[in-house]
Image (cartoon, rainbow, N blue to C red; front, side, top):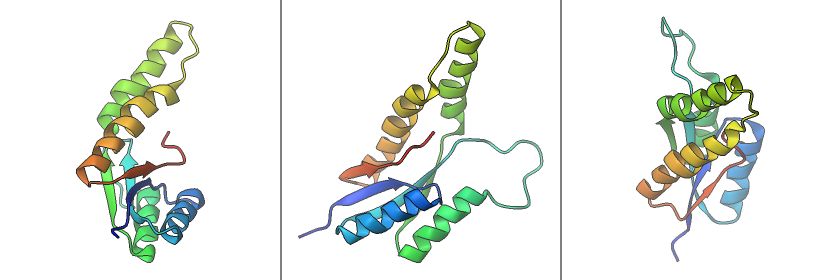
Length: 126
């Protein structure tokens, strides 16, 4: 029987790392994925993005593939700009609702379909 595939949102932190281990122990084929939400400004940093490096390192240690999705444009346009505009209009926006819609169940879900995953698993992505 072929293992069911899970695309797991990886932050490089304890929660997503433990989630990867637990999913592996339950018999799933786990694929790690990190969303790049911010575009580096100005001079390229000499040090790599620590969270992405941590996520990649955890995936390497667990023997699972790791992907990065560049989401900085959609994050800025659909989440950050929305928040700023609503706040300017004296409203109390909930950016997580927009983030879930466009990123978790948008870009992340599309990556899962591309990789032929059966499930997605996340703690939170925003």
